[in-house]
Length: 205
Image 1 (cartoon, rainbow, N blue to C red):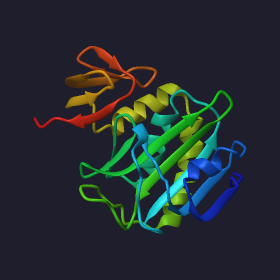
Image 2 (cartoon, helix red, strand yellow; image 1 turned 60 degrees about the vertical axis):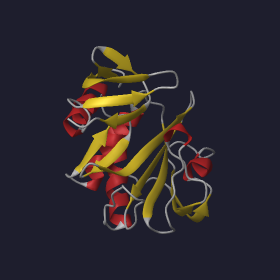
Image 3 (cartoon, rainbow, N blue to C red; image 1 turned 90 degrees about the vertical axis):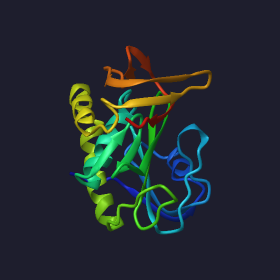
Image 4 (cartoon, rainbow, N blue to C red; image 1 turned 45 degrees about the vertical axis):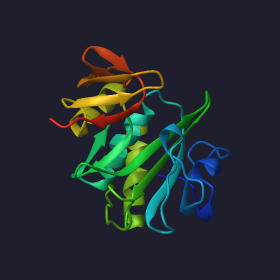
């Protein structure tokens, strides 16, 4: 396969900011982000050189968040699981996350993975960054173009959410119940109610 063009930078505000103006197929990797961000306006912070910080410019895909999660989990290795909607877990603690910013013409998929440092309560992967990036490049290419049914099936296999009692914080309310499944759009089914987004925590027991 032809390797995608990879833009390598030392310090950026966010790889998402750089990738936004690049053509589909581009990849941006940085050693450090001064204004990295996650979902729901959360900050993503890591000392320089301690994480894989990468953004992919891809074709729009309604299941891209799930597909990117599958790709990242497979690239990281068998111990990494997926927490809905887009966190990577190692031994139950967050080791990485995914942020999708989509327009009608392209999608920017940002992935951050802790490698040699992690904030309190989080996990680190302790893998060489370049080797992980190479595996991730191949996995993103494969899963971002996979059939929807294949993405959903593989996500379920890697899920650390389905079957557990969860609490989801929404802007106007809180939902608690058992995460039963995801639907064809990637929404989470909690005690018969579909949830499209929110901040999820797993309840003990």
